[in-house]
Length: 324
Ligand code: BDR
Ligand code: CA
Image 1 (spheres, protein in one colour):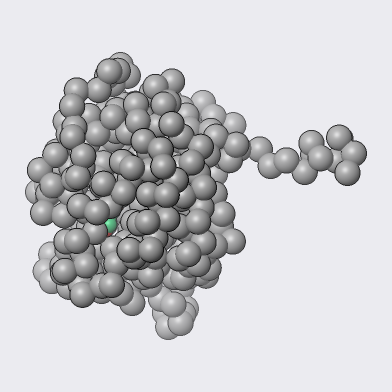
Image 2: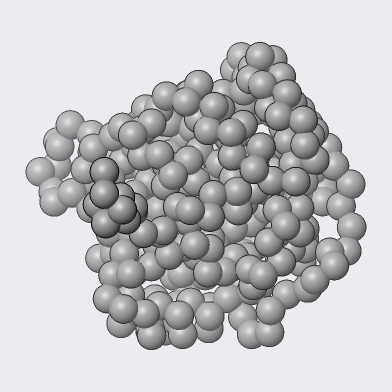
């Protein structure tokens, strides 16, 4: 292959904003993303209240950035509560500090000046048309607020990739709802109705990408500080889900979504019509995925429902090996 052909064959990195509520699996996702600079140019990390309160999710995002050796990435704090509903947290799964299994402390570097919502408005508003991907690892409050205040910023968005929702799997916070959507269904509806290109990685797929003793050993065998930290976090994190759902291993939801950006060929799904239920009652926060096109409505999301689980753990271990 000539140098010219080799160069043109290189794919430009995804221009990426990661919106997150760390969160055990969020930290693993951030480390995986930071270990992959050839594919992902992380413009900023924006934080939101979710698994724990905003102060802790923001601190944990700064810690993850420090652990990934990427203090050049700005972290902006965003919404401290959902659009309309009362806040709901998940300390029972992620621990009181939001990251179980490891010591948390005051990060060396703090937050960037200005808020996440204004950052999204400025960055997406001034971006070239359809140039930026937004990875949503928590409740979608920040992007919803930005779209409400400045709907024209949708033009700057190439893709919105959401870890959230569930249909065939059942819920993890109510019988039918997944945590990130349940924690702010109205925000999910705003993003859904904005017309941006959307991909959902629901529990339908993340509950198929499970840890096992062998996979945790595979990660530990990487033998650096990053992999040791991930194993400590996962050891503490997966037990709650395994016990609650009778699973043989635990899902690493948000990291699966970063893996989708890095290697979409590990995943499959299809374009479908999806609705978020925000009516009060037992179905609040449910995502209704019209997999068999019963409603005959236009497709509005790419719904991912299967993955190569071992491929995910191979990718995670290889990439963690690139960190210190
Ligand atoms: C999602 O909810 C959070 O608890 C996890 O971080 C993940 O983003 C899974 O339902
Ligand atoms: Ca999360």
